[in-house]
Length: 99
Image (cartoon, rainbow, N blue to C red; front, side, top):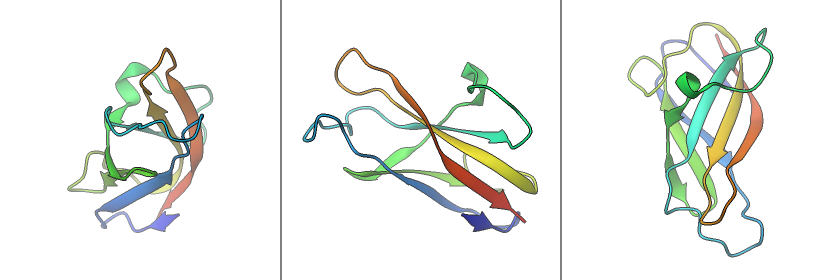
């Protein structure tokens, strides 16, 4: 995904529950944006709360008026889902380039 630094818009991530049919919408998804040069998993301070756009799509508003304001560069997008079981799922979900 590519967005200008002056834009405020949603970053969306498609989510597939395993096993199929598990309702994930009871817990808000969380997102982390890590600079391309940073290695490792997000820390507690990196996470921002997103929302469900529908049962299969999580999103978060980024930009100057969003939950996370990002500077120019490439960012690794991470998502954290807390399904209604014993799991806590953390995945790298892609990359975002801010120009």
